[in-house]
Length: 336
View (cartoon, rainbow, N blue to C red):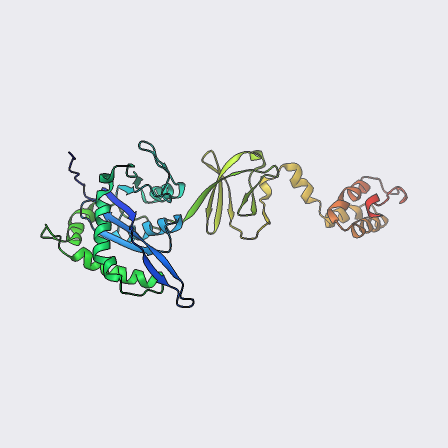
């Protein structure tokens, strides 16, 4: 025995990928790849959205959700995905572990993710039905078509969706679109002012130099976080670093491998003072003592191939009073 499910207007959006794929032919090489078909169906009206993507990876999964919300012109109360790895990191009947990016998407749009239970196909019967209908009425009609890009396929899919959503049900004297206009659409939440910007979340350990490695680039955090584990939010243009759900640093994302992005305020005071001793500042200090001290300092800086290594002897010489014999102020041994 089963309990018949009643879906409230605007409550649930069921999402999944179709089992069938559509071949895409590379016009240059003739190579064939399989496009994945994302399906989303509203519970009350069965109003359906479909979109092709190159894969079922996380960016494609998130992008299709954003496009689905725009197609429906609103947001449901609950998202009901299958336990796809892109959306659910760790399936569980009671407390599934939702992918952080997927969870952030839901928070941005003011909705909730409640995955279908494993081994309970009736939890996702609506989307299974939508997938079946899409495969039967849309994908089957595309068998004899050749597509050379995802964009071309989506243009055809969109036209086919219009036909599907305006076709009458077999047992009801109405259409999905008519039910959507009267039931789901008025109950959906409004879209936010800006769409969600895709970002990935990672965990990282702060190095002893108070920098975090992200895609082989190093970003600074306050030095007090050295050796701590932090969360990194990685967007296309920004990198945010959080510790215990508090944002500790934000940087413009850099794609230069092996380079450093450092904020001066993240350094200990002693490191900040050390960096303030540039060659020009040391020479200015030597000028206050006399021209002979300036010449000696210039010699020390020039003969050392590593300028920063000459800072200590030069700064030490400036601590000697004016008139000190130059024989006392010898260049560092490694520079002789």
